[in-house]
Image 1 (spheres, rainbow, N blue to C red):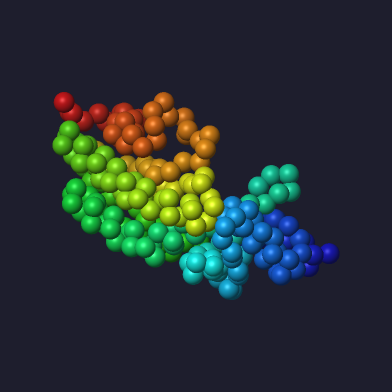
Image 2: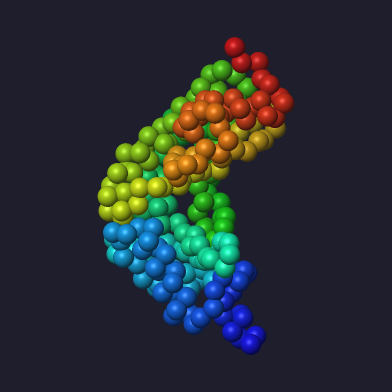
Length: 215
């Protein structure tokens, strides 16, 4: 009984029962639903419930299952991120950020060892705020230039991609989330388009209660 129960554990939560082979097959089936034009295969496991998966286009990425609701499960993965990396996306946006006086760093988050994060620097003046908004807009524009290729090759047109980012006000560090793409129906409670990064940064500043002298 205990063995049967533990066989359904993935990433610390109960997901579904079955052998490793049947679990792999169920996960791959979910991936094929999301990306109907692409094939996938498991090439191993890292860190327990995290799978190494290879797409038929040669992209390798981590994936794992997590509980959803009512006994269902979902697959979490970094296929798009690794696909972008293989096409030099991150190298390109590093340069775009530096041109605007911004920075970046790679962290480790949620089973992913190279989680890209924006460092927008101080937002204490109109010029700094404008440069930060322009930098994120350029990061999105570079993603948009590759988006159609990914959608056509995978059959997935409902993409979610965002970066965490930091900025400072009066020397104090704050954090935000910058969406480059939202899935259909998502708004995250904003009353303006998610790609209006100037408005988003102004909203972040207002929420801190530390309003800089921006004319």
